[in-house]
Image 1 (cartoon, helix red, strand yellow):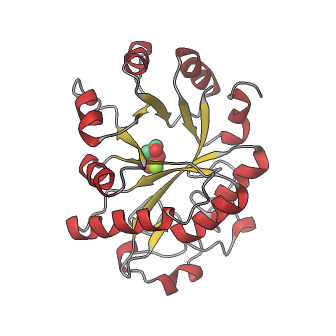
Image 2 (cartoon, rainbow, N blue to C red; image 1 turned 135 degrees about the vertical axis):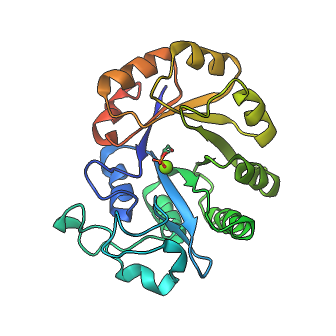
Length: 246
Ligand code: G3P
Ligand code: MG
């Protein structure tokens, strides 16, 4: 069965990476979502894709200057639609509560923090601590483009399952060495240019392969027929039909 991941939540029908977008997964029978997390000035882990506020909020500037007390006054919904006006900038703690409440599973992408190693260690430890609050029946997969971050996370929390994100350019012949050195379970690869042969190689190596970001239904079907384990899409509200048995 191929798994459908709602990329940044239900991002075609709600503002990306908000509690509204992720909570809507439950309304459509989507059990897995993908989201992005990073750390702000006071050590709070927040849910946002960019390291600045400009694209997806009513504010400008770096997220790295924020305090937790700023978050609920940041509007992350109006840029998408007035229907979502007033959605705050979520914390990972709030997301964990939502996952427990709505029985959702998360592919948590840890962004490659731009402030150096010390902040990266803080981010890793804070993510591990928040995920401890998940109910036992919740599942998580941690992903990142930063392989050193993933290796360190695995060292600190060996029980967590990991996926190494590869852009099209980065998926070189050494991918399997990277996966094994990191201690990962999965590769998360760019759909652009992905071949059937690569899918077969990953599968025969016993490595889970999830593909992003697939918004063409024909391409999603093709990838599922090739045997990918998961499709990460902005269109999860309709692509959920592609999960077998539905
Ligand atoms: O996890 C897949 C995808 O989210 C990676 O790229 O930039 O959307 O976080 P990006
Ligand atoms: Mg992401």
